[in-house]
Image 1: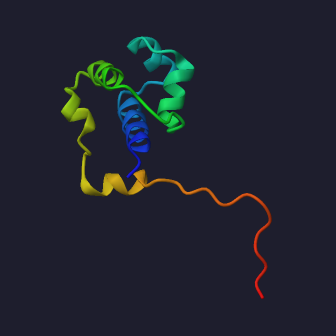
Image 2 (image 1 turned 180 degrees about the vertical axis):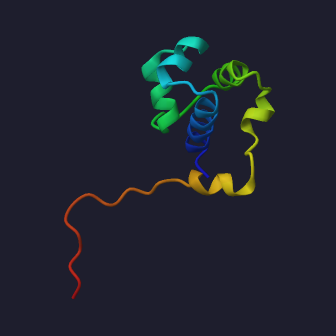
Image 3 (image 1 turned 45 degrees about the vertical axis):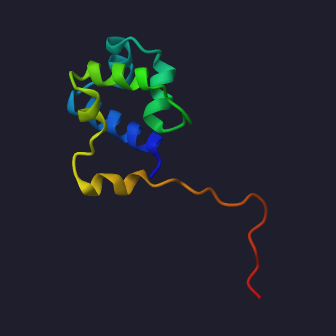
Length: 93
């Protein structure tokens, strides 16, 4: 499981439940809009624990509540993406 994809998916789902745009949430929570956008899309490679705590607090959640998947199927979408190799595709012989 890719933890950054999980955090991004969790943030997006919570934000949509709250009927907020990325810009509205980032402003309300005190984060830079572009930073939040990168978090939600899973583009950041790392995140500090205190940042996750701030995000959880913004949704009035404890850290453990934020990090707990809502159900088992939730984790299916959080598998690490494996990019294809650059260059030409191999020819079938």
